[in-house]
Image 1 (tube, rainbow, N blue to C red):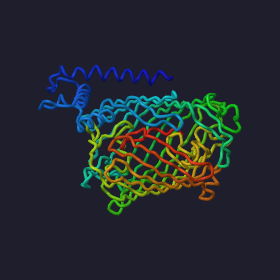
Image 2: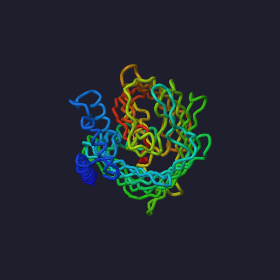
Image 3: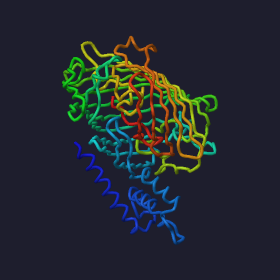
Image 4: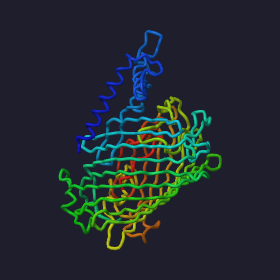
Length: 484
């Protein structure tokens, strides 16, 4: 399994070199080259700016040229370097991503993303994602606002039109922790395991054409594969826990997982308040005789108060795949301006998750959301605690965040407060007995570049926690399928 992403990286790299080096022999007249080859040629010239500059002499090692080359390396299409963090404890991943698009005469557009990355500890992720949508007739936005550093508004990139996705992704994580189930587990119960999960499915966003309301649909097949980890200072999970204390540990199963929900993302009071509301239900149906079928509901209420409305992007663009940050149907990402703006916001979030197993069934522990450090999707919740510290079928989170750019340098200051818990039963989904955690640190936001976090967290009774992470999607890109 570990050789698959490496082989994919090699194939994409060989293709890029073979096509790009042929650009010097092409006359660059209409019809001289196909669409994909033309995109490779354009990217090749962006990486060699002096070949486009008529005035001589020309040096590639100027600040402007080096900045442009760097942006092409991490943002360029059709091929760029893929960077980002995998799940906590599994390291920083690097690889390649291939992004392409096709415009049809009937106004339908298709974008494809394929990527493969690996980390030093042998963990990896490889996936392919197709997105298609028809150009809408309306120009009314549904939750995304584009702007320039001067605050001048541009045409919104996300308009009222259905978006359809098909994807297949495999993720292999060599180190995850399990402390037992519930909010009262002890640090001494720590054990280690590995997980490979393959997800294949389809999803859709169906706008209601008013007030930023849209419906979401998904249908996924999930194949999780557990394994022990005997290379750590703590015991492997099977040496400490059993099927009774960790449901799903010894009885493998595959799942069909349909789901649906409603999303509300209006911008109110002339952009002074932006809502990001989501309510959905997912049905996990075990395909074998194992008793692991269950239903999960989630309500997520986000409130964003921009401190300055001169912002580039306030929500993901569903037209983009996880490796694309194009602002529209163009072949590339917006140029990263060196202008320092006053970007910043205050955010308040309430997240509630509940699970209900069918009669005689249990929720597999590897599908339980976690609090403590960051979860398997890389989202920090109670970050002062160790990663995956508390695990249960239900989740309660209250969060307040303040983030603002620092003047004249490409960094931002970040502060957040979390209050959360992992209840074992749905009757405990309330706002009592919440654990607290505080985070302060630096962030890096640069157009379509990965979002970087360096955070120090404290609070609770289990010490402090320093984390460094890089988002595994480009700014403005849609998210990858959740691993739980």
